Length: 129
Image 1 (cartoon, helix red, strand yellow):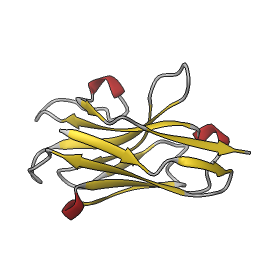
Image 2 (image 1 turned 45 degrees about the horizontal axis):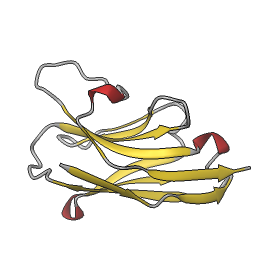
Image 3 (image 1 turned 90 degrees about the vertical axis):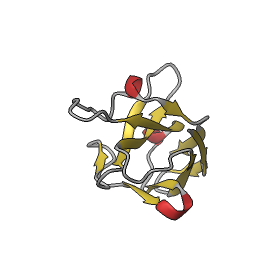
Image 4 (image 1 turned 180 degrees about the horizontal axis):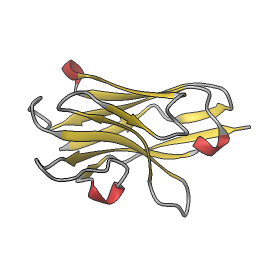
């Protein structure tokens, strides 16, 4: 599995950005995995931003992103998007997409970055006030 993020940049508070995560090697639409976006600020751990579960298309957000960010996918393009609106300075960081294979019958907690099996190289987002 390879993941390639793009779409980052430098914007002002209140602006919007759309990030893309191009995935290769995820060949089965029936596999149960999660593909999620994480943000990592300097000297901080990766924090979950949004997640999409492949098996049923369920989406998950944090309290700080649920009203501003939207995760979606284009199955034909093997791409997952993160539409970010009303950006705030605290949204600044490197954004990574990751894939976590979900084992049947096992508990699953999508923001647990250490459970993810594959990561992209990240894309930088800078939001100035």
